[in-house]
Amino acid sequence: MSNDQDKPTSAGKSIARRDFLLGGSLLGLASGAGLTAAATVPSASAAAKADFPVVDVAKLSDIADGGEISFDYPDADSPAVLVKLDQPAEGGIGPNESIVAYSMLCTHKGCQLNFQKEHGMLICPCHWSSFDPAKGGRIIIGQASDRLPQITLRISDGVVQAVGVNGLIYGRQTNII
Image (cartoon, rainbow, N blue to C red; front, side):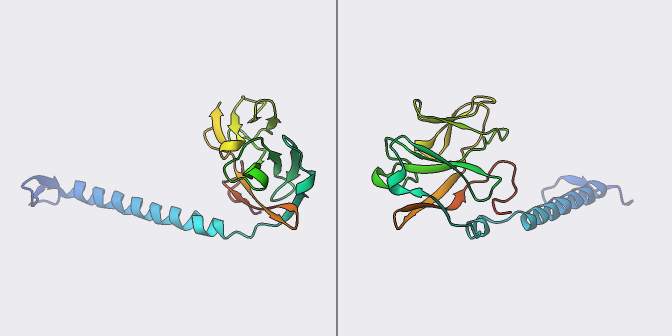
């Protein structure tokens, strides 16, 4: 019997030795690729333990209803905005849990967003993706496919501070550079 002849299998079907070896080789390559990918992608727990800076954004008493405050977080290349909404918001802090902050880089192409107070939305001027700050930065309409990264806030001695980011800022492999 030559090496390329069919061999019976336990299911009664035949499989050529060449096909068997090729299938095994492909499976091995796929497994190795998976291990390589797992080794290079940081885990969610590693990202959660990132050492984010603590940045004072504004005094709680200085934040007007419907107001917005621009700041950079977690570094100077990351524009962000803090807004005080007229309703409670997912992840909100302060009175009525209405103070939230987000990265201002659209998750579609990285254009800088504008807060439209009259619509209560963060809107991209490039392709009109619109995000709802009251609903965790969720996409409402447009080209973007992911919600906005939300800046984690806390209040310490009457000062609103940025202390972390939930989600990946556009154009980055990690939020801490």
